[in-house]
Image 1 (tube, helix red, strand yellow):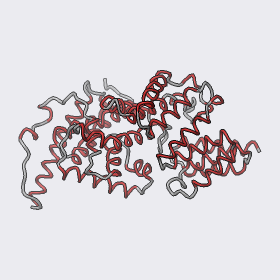
Image 2 (image 1 turned 90 degrees about the horizontal axis):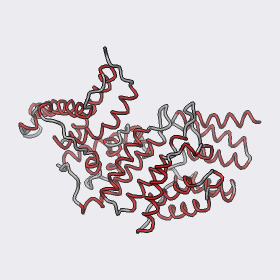
Image 3 (image 1 turned 135 degrees about the vertical axis):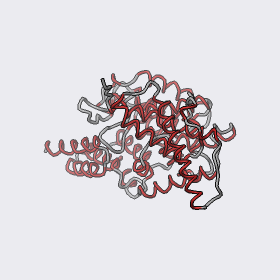
Image 4 (image 1 turned 180 degrees about the vertical axis):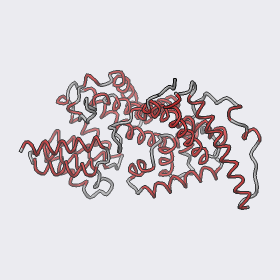
Length: 418
């Protein structure tokens, strides 16, 4: 009998294993860019075969074996091409590197964190570091990364390609950087994890509101980073932020898969263990040194999560925390969230006045979230016609189907009530 495995189960497993497989292949062979191509081909083969034939007993080892064999073929092909074209001197690989992968057992170590630090090597620009990490470790598509950076997809594709070529040319060794370099790279590592988590928690495209497997993998990596540098306040803050945010995920969707906004969520469905752990982490981190943006965002999340109801939220404290964030972070999303908090304390018009200042910021002026917040505040202010138009404008700009449906529903409700 043929074992048929649901394709969603296979897809979730492959997303989890993808960075581990790439890390293992890069450790063994180097050649980052070619290793990524080989790993992608192994994942494609698994996506085709596993739903039909069943998931192998050791899926990670299976993928590493297939990727290693494919990489060997690619390296030999590249060697032949170079010889034919006489662009560079002929080179050969050590015999042990060309041995079929099946002849050597796959390493059981998880090299994902090493791969993460490698993508954040200081020889790359900050933008290239993050873009390459999102691609290699987060598994995001070029289009998703381009949206995160607010640049055209072709621009991002070129940036990622150049980053891979630079890593290959630099001869960067595969391994955890020495202690003296870890702190230097940590800022980029944390920012990349933050962006990957955001894509998992609130997908920017596709039919699903969130990608739970991506959030779970990023939390796992954040735990590893925290264990590696337990005294770093921002590493602790990021882990706390992820836990406190992901704790609400079970209540973010209704029975039909639709978006449920924070004030309307059933808080009994929130993950109490994540909340308890996140609160403990941020409570311990805040008094111990310089306060950074992840710690402050985690503190905001803790205020939300500890409130017994939406009406009991300590909005003045949230305003104060966002005020501190604005002093250290020129981030339009922080300013947008600050405007919402101000509206909750001082009224909708006070929040709308702050939104007016954001309209000139090219980084967010075309983002659906700005229009969605404006719609919400206009609705609070009683301007139902303008609110409906703003909801519709937000829906046109949203690239996530659940978000589009939610925004259209809000606009329709205002129309029906007139």
